Image 1 (tube, one colour):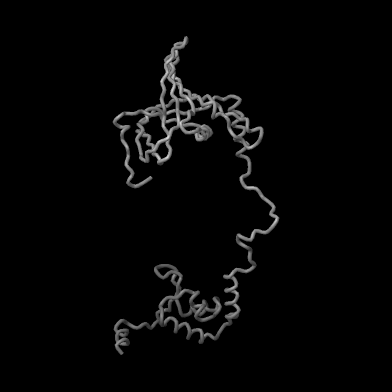
Image 2 (cartoon, helix red, strand yellow):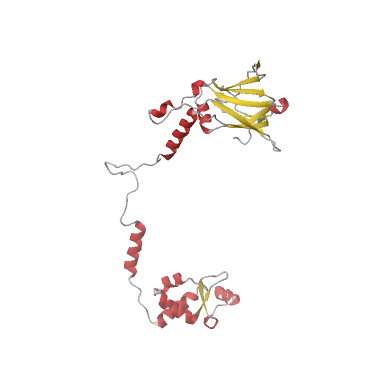
Length: 287
């Protein structure tokens, strides 16, 4: 929907009242098969013994449903669908329509009043599909009635439900044996580039061997002169010492920060620290 789309509010002035009807999925699929300017069915509104009765009759041309098998091809969609009326409630609902410049949907109303022997007044509404060339958002009207369109349980409806149940149990993905290998997709590899680089680095560095304690201390003190906090992994890369041996030395000269801003890092104990003050740094830079 465009950001600067204009809304046609003609329906507000005309005070059009519309019905909000919930229809089955198979019925909406049959409506999509209707040709342009074609009739999809008729709505009959009648009163019997003071009670309003509404029903929808699907067009005979749309009752055939294409099936997956030969036996399913003859499945017929139920034609008669009585309405179950519900009050609109305290909600304020509106219906909008938007044309796409090619086609749209409209409702053609043809009223026919007939008086039967049983004192039944019927009003027929023909629902049609037509072409609309307007690319705009239009307010069709406000919802005045809510209803549910339910099918009549007969043989056609039971065959339809049986077919839908059969289609739902069919597997969407099936295993298939290939005659030749697929070369356009990802090929399996015994070793990936990451593993090759890691193994190469491991061979060049060799196995870590414990060095003398004083040699390791010199490397650690030299590193802590540059930075105050170090992660154990960084210290391993600097000293090239095993983790267990390095942690034993760090417990003697350092403090492990388990919380705070420098969590999971090591720093020297106060007696081993010797950091220059800001004044000494300025003097060293001036020299």
